[in-house]
Length: 167
Image (tube, rainbow, N blue to C red; front, side, top):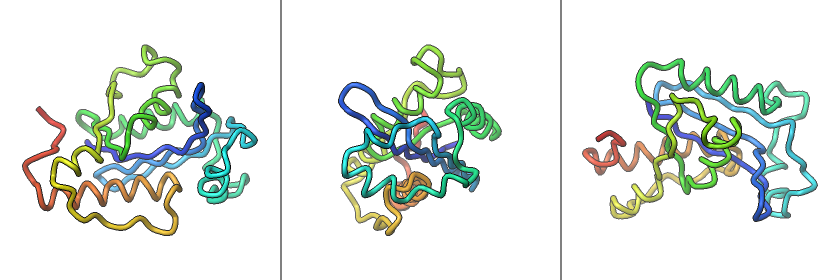
């Protein structure tokens, strides 16, 4: 099962702190959560203007502790049958933020891959075809996860035999 995801985060060159995560499965299921444990005062202006201003009200049920996000995300990912594939656009930081929900890489549960497939690289390998434009809600983690799925579908439509993620 392929999952397309995006993380919004605060980073300062030393630490990376989860703000929100959105995940969309090929089966249409979605997961969205906002961490109650990030420090918004550490956010750079760009994050304040493009990410924090799009977060739901703190009264929204999407706000959860990192422990609850970790447990519910694992349940979400493992609910679908088969091997999990993770896909993201510019996936390096996203994978680190995801993995850090469990601590260091050694604590990552076995069903979760140790890497995320790179949509941007797949796009370049496919010849950089036109992709769907991001919506006005870009940098909202769930909107970006949906956009990643749309990117994948576009690339696969023109290049169906590549980028399956399966050997």
